[in-house]
Image (cartoon, rainbow, N blue to C red):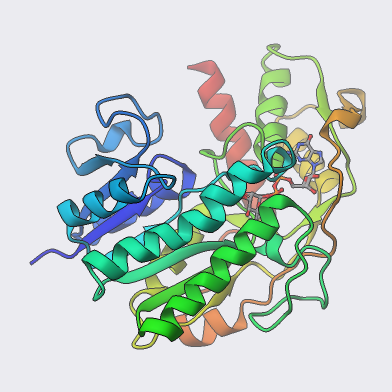
Length: 321
Ligand code: GDR
């Protein structure tokens, strides 16, 4: 019989790639959406008819219990959250409701309706914030620097706690930044690749950024959803850092993107705008994925340069269509 998976945040970047991966593997895929399941969801509309959507909200306990009762999953992937770090200062309590308490609600729903299921929690490198050591491993202490990071740290610890308190199969994937052509336009890589494409095609003139010096460990989302699945196929549940162990700056991202678009000197198009600067920044985030490599057999397959170039080409195609 086909395995059943339940994905919250199914209509986002990771949810859409994970759905495709699980369908390829023969899973019956169920997803949770906040709006009506009959609405359009850009990133998963091509999967209509192949996945079953349930209406539910991480703010609403009974909707989660009901969605799990209906879908009876073997595997649960909790990807739903507010994903834009910058907005978490404007909506700190909502961020906590969704990304912190929301995890408890999902775990409670699982504990009540399907305790035999396996649970994946989408944790984040933002939990390391003001990093205590470089590179970061599963053992590095957390020091979040945003309401987003603080909420994710709670989500991580409650996931570990349900494993230890109730012997549930719960895992936390500490994912560093992961990008793709499906990345939202507010995130810095996609903002840059979209603008490079738009400037190339004469549809935009300038690109306004908060800073060129910020650095991140950026990987390809398609590689990262594979790691989520692998974590739930192990004999014993554990937590894993998923990263590339390489750090690149926003400036390098701009250089590669404008080069791929054939635009020459990028300096003439880029301006700095303080509205995109955050009240507190994270520093020296770079992940050591050696535990994932030795236990899951996982490693990143797409370099930073390839990733940014494929995103620019995709944005050029999108804007030409
Ligand atoms: P991040 O991603 O906050 O790391 O979170 P984002 O792409 O938003 O920022 C990366 C870095 O770029 C700097 N930056 C800018 N960022 C944006 N968005 N816009 C700008 O104009 C700009 N200029 C400079 C930021 O300050 C930051 O340093 C992502 C999300 O996917 C989270 O959900 C996830 O948990 C983490 O990655 C891992």
